[in-house]
Length: 352
Image 1: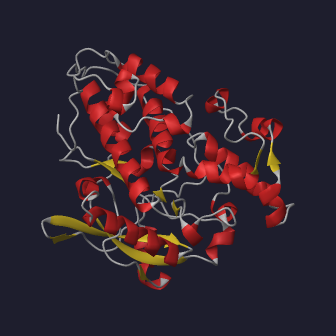
Image 2: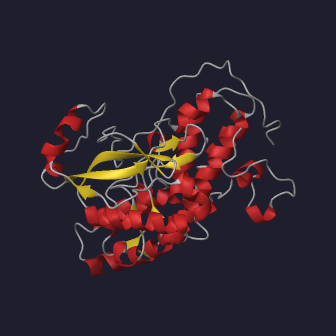
Image 3: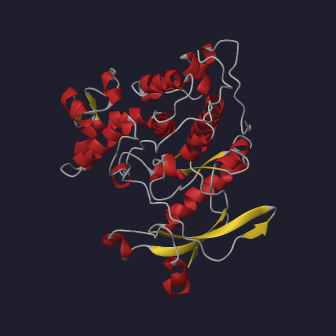
């Protein structure tokens, strides 16, 4: 479908890509404390971070660490950033000098100021090169496909195995390691959530999901819409209220996915709609990744890239349950079990 994957054009002039705004995302901070140290042949840095719910951050970080040492998750270990040790609370007076040197100071609203605390968090130093910067360094379809493959595979397996959604994937949070060309999903902070049991259910999801933007799939918009309905209804009333076509139109206005038919949601109770939407959770971050890649490609002009971007645009209008979990599915436009016998030259963590 895309011809020669090895085509490279190093003379293309590229401007900054259009990245959709996501207000739920936490602003990336360049605040570090102390000097990097070498541990087990890796540079370790200490970042100054600020968040309100240390218990939540610790729980999410534990899930990430469990995933990276599991049999199925070990192969994705290098694609995920996690805090190496439990965050250590620190007094403002101790880090004041470091904060003054930050290239991008930590910013929070007045309502957050009194509730959040400063923490010292240790990470492996993966550099600051973003995905768009990497793709523009040496525009090449194979490099793009490889990065895309690693990201959607990592997010899908992580979400399936650990019931964890990042919910804020966009270019600034994807870093590409300088020497290894490995994309790393960073910033599993306030926007990320676990979707199981008491963590996230039909009774409390509205406390976690308060907004959805252009990087989020149709189901996220529906849940935000249904969450706002709880302001006027008791939980029992909410459970039994019908979600009709008019409400669906309101909830999904402007979404490309709204062109599809959704009999699984229409004329069902809110509780039933929530239960159906649960089935889509493993692919929520995949939708965000496809939006991100599509936006980056708008400013990269190389052979065959327009075909791939067109394929991504078409996919973004599909139902979330139909989103592909491999790049091969995107290329051949069919489920993985029906793929052609010839395979695309995609390998995990391969340099080009």
